[in-house]
Image (cartoon, rainbow, N blue to C red; front, side):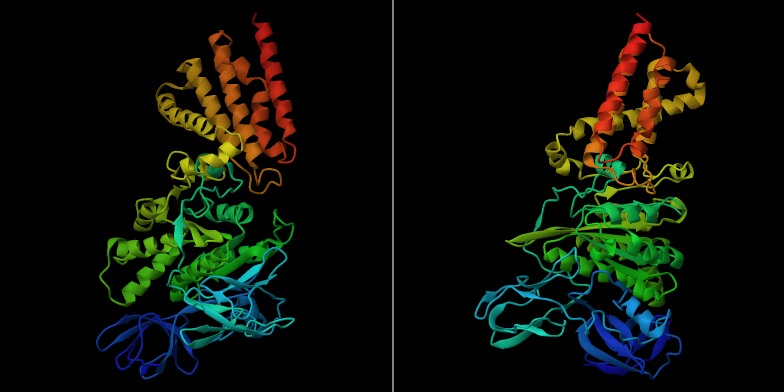
Length: 585
């Protein structure tokens, strides 16, 4: 292991001119407190280290020690239901031991060394095992079974199996003989955070990540293993949208990263998530959730590492065969950390002061999402949903512009929609999804002509944009009735379908069947209205029908378990149009 001393301190960046025998990305310890750092640059006579803790009081001459290992995370039972900081220190345990502040040099173990787990061994002595093969199973929570695997960089023959009634994470499960060497496998292993876990092959993202949010699922969907961005200015609802996705998305595991956000927002997450009921199991949603909290008042370098800590955990559960949804809130704060670190290292700035490698870092991060075949017997996925906080809502700024190059679903939040209390404030003109055609088969299996309905909805909304420009010139009263009907239909789609109340027990989640019936009845109303206009019936008589306002309120009034009510609404729609027709015969 390398040793040396500090020669210069610049905020979280420390340099040394006499440290030898260290490697790029190696984890180091600094001073008597053992502050955690990582080697990020090696020159001929100088190494540069980013320190993941407060560097106040550091000075030239303080000792630096290499650990001989890259910055890594521990992966094993105990991850779920836990809250970590950006370098995987367990915040709940630290609070119990030290109070509400993290002491510099705190060495709390990420996984409990005392807790015992009931383990079902899946291998036998003399068996040949390969990388990522499951060797044991642990009921980590009532919802998720933890599958202990052979590390991705190891294979060999099982020399012995240690059969006990219960195990701690440090206990040996088996001894593996590989290339003439013996390796003891425990319930956990470590993996470098900046290194992708290997898989057999990448699969097409053909399965929808159903979220229960109508504007996403039906208009701008994301597939399992997809990557999406939610850009929006202050107050447009990024965090609330991500909370809704974390609760309702059709994922086995949720990893939520608060990266550089305000402390009160992260505190709200820490308070609310344990209280949320998992709609899939009725248990606490924390039983399948990991929280990583790295708020804006924490060291900026730890903010940069939190993204990698989260994605490495996500890949680990993916390798077990689970579908993982990872929320990063927000990648803009992560990019700001890159900018500050680059400035401290006196690197040449690019646009808006960001480092020239911003694009490649974003690309490498989003590349780690995807649906993967881990082994012949299983596949899993990591879906990445990153919030972006462009200053002033400017989507042309570098972080948003670079992100658009690497994601396939772009959910642009609109300030005007948010001010009008239209949530989710996802703009139907600026947003897009490239996954719709790939997941179309899923909707067809639900007997829903999603391509036809979505095409009609988008045509109506786009035509409404054109008509609204005419309205601003001549007023709505000067329009022909067919174009006025278009405005009414667009309003019905926006208020009755695209808008959704995240705080409503009925409307927070919308099932596929409910989404289908809602949009089908709205479009049926438009078809009948156009037919009646052609018969000379005035538009105001049509829009005065009570079923018109009933369709607007259907999302809030019809429960997912009571879909038959849509049949009653349809009967009233037919009856009211019939009565209107009889009046004009």
